[in-house]
Length: 267
Figure 1: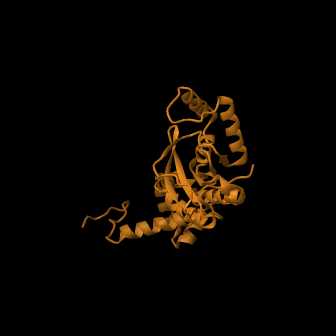
Figure 2: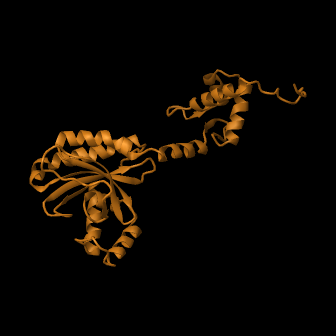
Figure 3: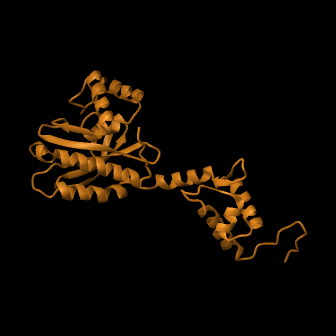
């Protein structure tokens, strides 16, 4: 065994690795929403470590950007924790969070519920839960629909900056296929303003005659609209279920957004 000098720490034993990991987790887990800032002595007390050992761990964690040392020498979680949480959240499939809500809405309305995401100038249906009745609307997973057609498309388009919406209007002016009916620039701007003001999009007879629906945005922890939740029904039933469908979709989208880490703020 190599001997250590007076200024060197002893060579770690086989048990030191797991112990170091456990202590590191203890230090990071000491911070809470109620106590996001802790002093060295508070950290030592919560972790059951002596101050000297705690100081050694905090120095290493500050170097790794997992902790941040404040001007008053207290500590808080560092930027690296945010980066790692972002990696974790980016791996979460919105469908996993949306499906229970989609099934609950379907069961209450007995209508088809869909989940869509944006892909360029189109929205793509990535999940659907069909109603059970014989005559019902369906969406078709994988279907590509232009961003001005239907409630989910409008919700996704309305979340984009004005410059991107102008770019979309420019694209529509090139007469791409399968984009009818096609609004004028003024009509599109008016529709987008309405969707933004309401927080949802309700459409009747838009994509095809006899169809109706309502959609709301699903927002992630960064405040970005990443998907749209919608109910699709036949027009004759809409006067009976429209108000209920609107509430279920708006509340359901908010519920999914909250699960994804979005915190709504009041204007």
